[in-house]
Image (tube, rainbow over all chains, first blue to last red; front, side, top):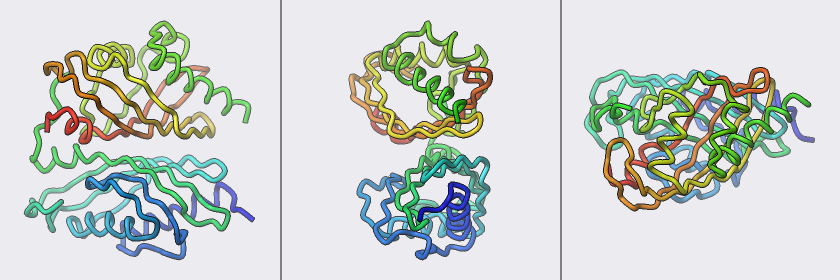
Length: 146
Length: 136
């Protein structure tokens, strides 16, 4: 008995708010063979399970321990949930191995989730504005004129 | 539900007729002239209008070909998860042609009003694109 689209969305909100705001990856909301297709941080292999979620969330929470998630748009139909979101935090831990800059950081992204029939997250695709992050840190120049 | 299907059909024309068939004349039929863009701060290419975007992208990547991997529609919104392959055979961001093949993927959200695209939220891997082009 699959959940409604609204229930699926509620599960995704619960999962991502817990993960980003408290650092807890809720394995009870994640399918055991969940696939995270996102390529954040140069990740190329998507092993099933929670490790990829824990890796990405741990990396950014390590850099910005005060990070907070704001979900700016939610679109959900059947087994799919799309969130357009923003993370705000302070770089006190150092991003991607760089020394801490102390700067306030905003990171934006859009995520698509596929939910399974048990109402658990089965697949995740995400686009994160990593170039914007590096520009805020002053590591790469701002976008050229257009 | 019927509205969602109609909205999906408009966005499919955006991907297949505009970008893949390179048919700029469909722009007037599927989008208003002043589509409101929401680019991430790190978007490499931030053209002022959709028409300008189409024209400048085709100078840099005339063979660009999109694949639509997923679409959903609810209310006045349509979401597309896409990827493209392209060859950089013209100037991009004021830089010389590299001849390099690039791949990108993203998730875009469209708002449709009265049968036309009026607003777009774009999310793609600009960092990966610039790395593939050896800009970074």
